Amino acid sequence: MTLEVLWSRLADIAAKSGMKCGRSDKCNAECCRPSVSGGEPGVTHPEIELINSFLAKHRGFRFYEAGIDSCKFLGKNGKCRIYAIRPIDCRVHFCKDESLASQSNRNASNLVEDYHSRHEAEFMETELIDSFRFSGEG
Ligand code: SF4
Ligand code: SF4
Image (cartoon, rainbow, N blue to C red):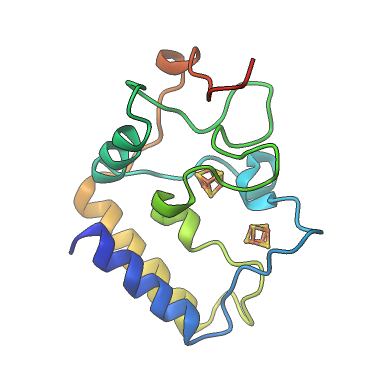
């Protein structure tokens, strides 16, 4: 299964269920903050390649920086700067799921777990890429 097919299946499951991101002005993107979400997203090599090509000038990436409680890709406006290619872990965090034990939720988790196991999901080491800054940032 390609990533694009998986994204589409996850979006389908979410659309047909009560699972959705209830993003509003009041949302502080808690799902992108490790103190709330419990850690950084797992990420597979196909996703790493995609994100690296998206960040064309950048030879590596990381999600969280020590001492900063937000994902590296979370913009100051509270929006994900790589939203179109965000990791599949980020595609299955739904604040508004009727039941975390729902069949829809299980279906989405199973798809992600299956992809992770076939592509050896891992967490990124952070030391390599401490120097990266998005343009316009200090
Ligand atoms: S899923 Fe994330 S962005 Fe969406 S409402 Fe919840 S915390 Fe906010
Ligand atoms: S990649 Fe985007 S959606 Fe995922 S944790 Fe980072 S800012 Fe949030």
